[in-house]
Each structure stands twice: as structure tokens, then as C-alpha cells.
Amino acid sequence: FTQRLNEVDSLKALDVEPQQQPLLFQLLYSSLITALETYLEDTMSFWVTVDNKVLRKFVVNCQEFKKQKLQLSEIFDRMDALQDEVDNYLQQLIWHRLDKVIPLISDSLDIDRPPIEKLMQHILLRHDIVHRSGKDKDGYLLSISIEELNQLQKEVVGFVNKIESMLHLRFPDQFSDQKIEF
Image 1 (cartoon, one colour):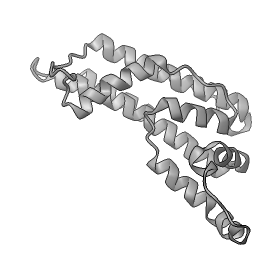
Image 2 (cartoon, rainbow, N blue to C red; image 1 turned 180 degrees about the vertical axis):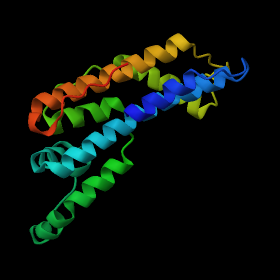
Image 3 (tube, rainbow, N blue to C red; image 1 turned 60 degrees about the vertical axis):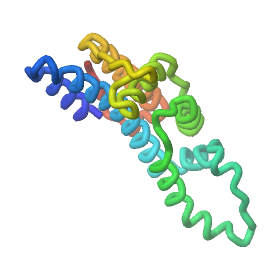
């Protein structure tokens, strides 16, 4: 996550032609959301792998796993394959759906739910950047200013730091004192 932030900062500092700057800022905007998604996936993947209590809570709280049926004769085979099933599920999950992902993370890791409203607005804008080639639904080109780009970065870093702080409190033996700065 930190490496991606540093890369975004380096690219923001480039001196590019004025006609190329809108595309660069759109790409960087999108990249910041992608960095958040990757952080969330990496974090959940780590914790379900290193802590059996987190794995158990994840399976208990995940709607996909809740609706699966299990015959008693399958229990040991399913237990042996459970970590792989969870890993595959996490790889397929749409991580920018914060309305679904954050409750699952919160319940599984036993941490508070950080507010997602501001980030969801950014994710909707990123959707237009990625899926409409930088235009809104009416076909107008979206313009991302350096201020908007910096604001998104600040909000993403703040969101990650909130989660990291809660994880540090919840699992103090697993952490060094490291905070992401912006």
C-alpha cells in the first residue's frame, strides 16, 4: 500500500504536457482506489491465514458460506479444504463494494466499522473513469484536479490508518508501531 502511494506521489510530481494531465490524474485517482482494494484483500487474506479465530468468524459471518449445506460425512474433507475455499472466495470478492466488504471485515476481525460514505462517492467517480473512459453517464469528460486527487489520497490513507489502528489494538502482538503518513 505504501509503495503504491509513493508511486502515485512520484507520478503526480511529473511535468507532463497539459493535454496529458487529465488522463494522468484520472489514472492516479483510479490507482488510489485500487490500492485501497488491494490493502483490504491483503489484510483479510493475512488474518484468515494466521488466526484460526478470524477464519472461523469469517466463515460464520460470510453470507456465501452461511448458505452452503454440509453433510456430516463431508465434514473432515470440508475442514481440510476450508482455508483454500476462503482464499478463493477472497480472491473473487469485489473489494470496492465497501457496503458489503466492511461489515464482513469488521465482524471477522472484531473491529469497529469505519465510515465509508466519502469513499463510496470516490468509488462511483472511479467507476466512470474505468468503465466510461473518464466520462460521466451523460458523456461529459470528468476533470480531476490535483486538489481532488490529494483529497482522495488523504481519505484513503485515513481509512487505512483507522483500520490499522483498530487491528493494532485488537492484535497488539502482531504489529510494529508503523503508521502510514501522507
